[in-house]
Length: 236
Image (cartoon, rainbow, N blue to C red; front, side, top):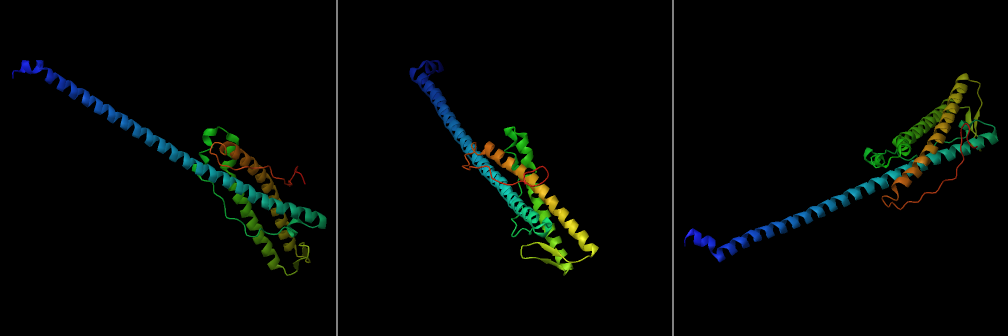
């Protein structure tokens, strides 16, 4: 068959047209399938990222709540010791007992902090940024206090503790007086730091809850704690 006859053949033209449209249809179908698969992959990645962020948000809020709880615990003990010292007319170091079974240090991770950065609350972000360092430093000072208190009692046999917990010093040794003064200053520093850091922790806890709880559906509810404040200008 001549080429001109072939090209003018209805069957040939139909075959060509069918092949072209078949290829186009197949390609379009592949495009739709690929597009659907890409959307599904993007949706799965978004879900995975959301789940990861939710876990980080939950972890951050729990850590901030624990920091607040730890600081409140030591603050309450200091508050009781201060009241007891006032009633007995003795120094606070004489009645403030070291912390029994202190909880491990808390460390807030950088990836947890990144959740706060897009939320444009610099005050809360700055509070949380150093909150774990503040909490851990308070407990480090408490450990130093415990060691110094034990050392003071072990070096002087005439330092006893009465039934109500007050330290009774029966020595005119100037070294004992100096060490006792240093121990009292350490307790006063601990009171000031704990009071300041507890206020920061409370603000941070409520701020983090406000920023993250609803966004990530964390399901936590936080109420304002009742507490007494210590330190200059504070409620006693």
